[in-house]
Image (tube, rainbow, N blue to C red):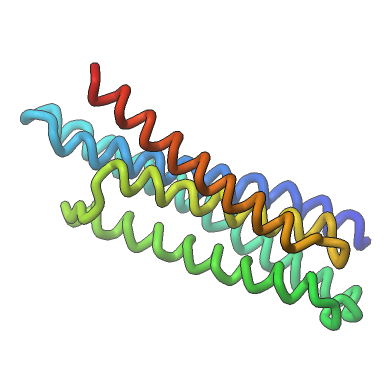
Length: 177
């Protein structure tokens, strides 16, 4: 039974992250559409709202709830894990991921009302936060108590630097065109 729940957990983690990664990409396109002249801006905005709603309600939100339900089921089956430090760290980052999820939901609501507070570059950086959370959560789940935290933190700092540099380089080449 445990192995089936774990498999479902992993499958829906992939679905949840796919939704989180793609929703922010849609936010970027939706935000950039605001710079277009009418009627293109309105047409694009309406289409992005449809895409965002469907992605969010059909894939992302249900996936999050299935991931959480499976995680709880696994803890019920193996309650001894609640005494392990790696799980506490993982769960802390899962809570941050859930907060990230609901902040994305708030962005959807704002954009539906025509409120675009963030520029596309800020949204690109926001998108990378989910990547960092994914790295930490997976490392904790796979390596467990054998995580070498100095190396892991150093690797994450390097990853942050590379992701931010990638966003900046992309912006440079995009503006150059």
